[in-house]
Length: 66
Image 1 (cartoon, helix red, strand yellow):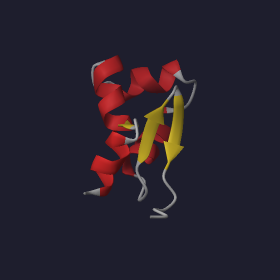
Image 2 (cartoon, helix red, strand yellow; image 1 turned 90 degrees about the horizontal axis):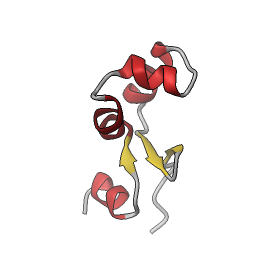
Image 3 (tube, rainbow, N blue to C red; image 1 turned 60 degrees about the vertical axis):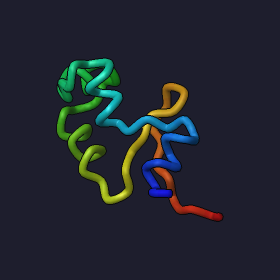
Image 4 (cartoon, rainbow, N blue to C red; image 1 turned 60 degrees about the horizontal axis):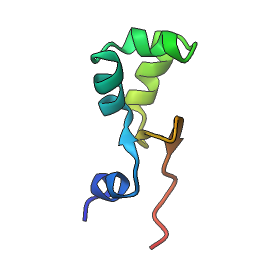
């Protein structure tokens, strides 16, 4: 199973999917909603380790332990 599939199974939603769903794909609108600069959202989206949304929190998976 791919890493992204495991994350979805664990209830994590990719930040890109969340922005698409809640803000119509508008990164600037998302940035305003969480009170950060638009460039910070772009950094989250292009991070080497993907950023996910879970229970209203931005999270990053550090590593698999299984």
